[in-house]
Length: 94
Image (cartoon, rainbow, N blue to C red):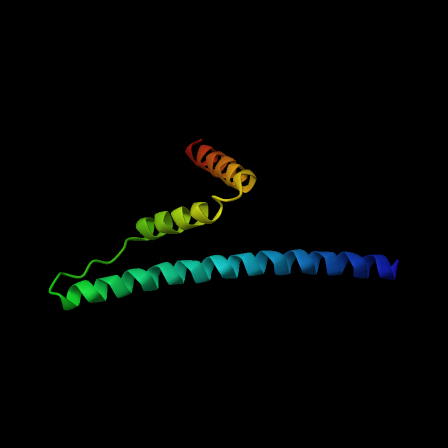
């Protein structure tokens, strides 16, 4: 019995670690997108333009575009991601 509960705990721990790594990677990518935009804006400000800050919605759109671009070479994963997004959007409107 004890080995069964230990095995279950280890499986759950592995799943939690997997999702934590995925979340951390997504956060790092979002930060990288912000950093890239900030760098471009600093160059434009140096040239005399007015600063422009991305809205949260625009940041989310850029992150989604980047995610879908990374899934481009795997059509099955892209299809799954698009189907999941459709379901999420459908449940939000209902």
